[in-house]
Length: 217
Image 1 (tube, rainbow, N blue to C red):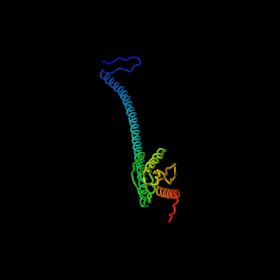
Image 2: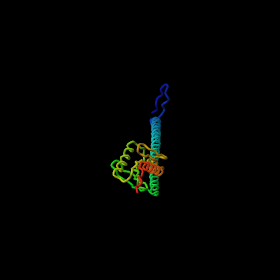
Image 3: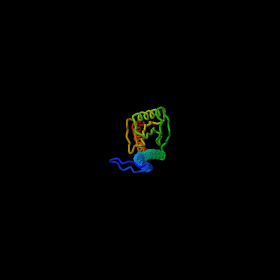
Image 4: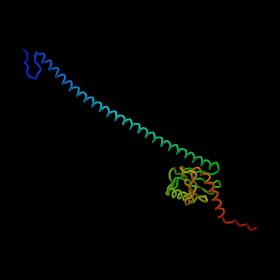
């Protein structure tokens, strides 16, 4: 049976099978466009997600690099500080060895009520001693009081004419000065400073000594 023709419409001289095939084709075209639109949206979404993941990956990688650089910097600083401490310790040991070679008597690690002294250095003639406290950081007023008290404690009942408190700052360079009774000295000037102080103390002691009286025959 053939279809009828309406005004304004295309002729419908088609069999039912042809109409069916055309309808399927139309549905396929519409579905294809919908599928293409959905696929495009899906592709855009995937691309956006991929860009976000790439950005996150880059940021994560940069964070790892920065963390590694910070860790290396921390380790480097610690090693540098350790090396600096080792150099200072060796420099102080060399100065103490210099005193020993010059005939001084050295006692190491002497405990007192106020301070554990690094060294007690006694002059060649045994008349004077120097109570040596060692500091690796900034000096404080309490450091001066403690080494002064340690020297006073050692002077009580000892055979030395006097005990001079000495504060060695291993971080200092080319320093030699008096603050009250305490001699503050850098490691590089320790031997020279103690020699000068011992000579001055001996001269003062000799000047203060009463003149010898002549024996009456």
